[in-house]
Structure formats: structure tokens, C-alpha cells
Image (cartoon, rainbow, N blue to C red; front, side):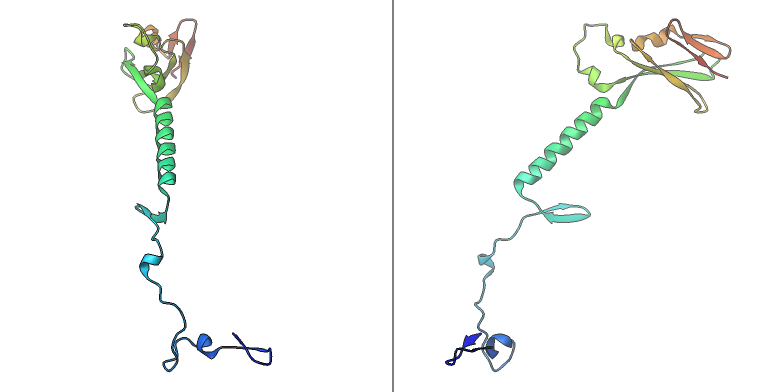
Length: 156
């Protein structure tokens, strides 16, 4: 827009029609070096601009969540079968208990739970125990399994 001698503003046709062949363009030429290019992080499905600090933060959060998830994922201690072979008892504990200091021979002193299932996959429930080595104390009788003073499973 230009201002005329009368003080009125009138449009500049060169600016209004920059692609006209007979008029020169009044826009400055910009070089690629004038504009820094963003950095891109590619993650298979999505690509988006992230700063280095943001990338490191996302990596750290994913790593910490993975370690926490691994720590609380159940680990199997031992499996035993019933005398008739129809049922299986499994003792579990949380993996973070592997990192706690114990004396040699005390690996079975971790707290956890014992679960009994039939060989066809039917779950009869689990029982929290103070020591997962109590799996060796299960007394199998027809229709039940029991750990004295802790609990009984009805297997019918």
C-alpha cells in the first residue's frame, strides 16, 4: 500500500499481483541458509520435531517405566504337580525381590503367592504366603489342597 499525495491510501498493484509477468516481484529472495531446519525424530508411524532435551526426557521416562514394570512383573519360583497329576501348584514372587539382599540359601524366604490350576487351565485361585518355599508344604487330598494354618483350595 502506498500513500498518495492527497493522503489517501491506495493499493500497490505490484504487491497485489506478484505473479504478473510484466511486473517485477517486490519480495526479497530468501535462501535456505536463512531458515534453520528442524530436527526430526522418526518412530515408525509418526515423525515430528523434537528437541534433543525432549528426546532424552522421553527416553528416560520410557526406561524408568520399563524398569518399574519389570520389577513388579511376577517371576515363577517353582512348580509342583499333585500326586494324581491332575493339578499343578505354582509359586510366584515379584522380581524386585531378587534385588533385595538375602543370605545364601534364603531364596525361598521371599513373600509371594501360590496358585493352583488344573492341567486343562482351570484356575482354583491363589493364596498369599509369607514364604514361597511353602509350596513344598501343600498337602494334597482328594478334592482339596491345603497348607496348614494358611489356606485350603477346593479342587472340585
